[in-house]
Length: 401
Image (cartoon, rainbow, N blue to C red; front, side):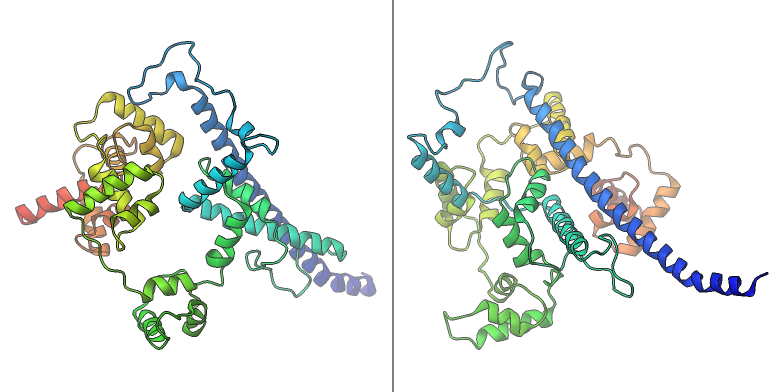
C-alpha cells in the first residue's frame, strides 16, 4: 500500500468529519424550518375550516333563532368596507368609530397567539440570519466553524413586524393583530431577556422597599425594574409593589354593574369597571356579570340541543371556553367547560374504578398531595375528572381506607 496515499487519506478524515457535522446541522435547521412552516399551514387549514363552518349557517343551531330556507341576511345600502374608504363621505366618521372601538375594546393575547408570536419572531430572525449569511457568501443554514448555534429569538433589530402580525393573526381568527401590537408585546414583555417566572418573596420585599424610597407620585418604574435587577418588566414591578384593595360585591355594586353594562355593553369591561368601583377590575366585572347577573343565563338542566351546540363549538374552537360559550345560547364559559369535561368529553372514562386505577390514584395523591384534585387528575391521566377523583377519595375516607 502506498504510504503517502494512506497519509493523505488520514489528513482528509478531520475535514470529512467536520463537513459531515455541518451537513447534519444544515439538515436539522432545515427540518426545524419545515416544521415551523407546517405549523403555520395547520393554522391556515384550521382557519379555513372555521370559515366553512360559519358559511353553513342553515345547519348550525343559533340558540333559538328562526331560520327560513332560502332566506339571506339583510344588507344595508353600504357595506362597512365601503364606509371606511377614503373617497366615502362617511370616511371621517368611520375612522373615528374605528379608533374608538380600538381604544375601548380589550383583546388579550391567548396562549396560542403568544406561541405563534414566538414562532413568528424566530422565523423572522432566521430569515434575517440567512440573508446576512448569503450576502457574506456563507452557507445560510449553518454557523461558521467554531461558532455557536445562534438563538433566533434574541435579535430585536430589522424584524418585519407586519409579517409577524400576519402569522400571529392566523393563530386566532377572531382578532386582527397589528404590527405595532406584536412589536410592543414582544419587546415589552415576551422577549427572553424578561423574567416571566413566579415572583419570589425576596423580590416582592425588595421592589416594595425600592418604591418606598421614591418620592410620592414620582415613581419611575423603568428605573425600579433596573434596580431590582431580576429581569422583571416595569409593569410587573408595578403589579407586585402596589397592593390593590380587594373589591367586595354588594347589592349596590351589582346595581352599578348592571347600569354600566346597559350603557357600555358587554364589550367594554374597562369602562364598566370604572362605573362600579375604583377597586373593581374589568375581569371581575365580566366574571360577575357572566356568572351571576346576566339575565339570559340559563341555570336549568342541559338539553340535547344545547349539548349538540356545545359539541359543534368545541369541534370548531377547541377548549377555548370563552369562545365556545358564544355559540351556546344562555350558557357561560364555566358551564360549557364543566358540561363538556364531565359528560360530553369522548375521552372520559366511565364505569367502576379498576384495582389498577385505584393504585394509580393512590400514587398520584402521594405525589401531588391531598386536596389538589385537579392536579391529581392531570397526573393520573386515565380519563377521570377531578370530580370523579374527589368523589372516590371521599368514599375512601368515609369507609376508612
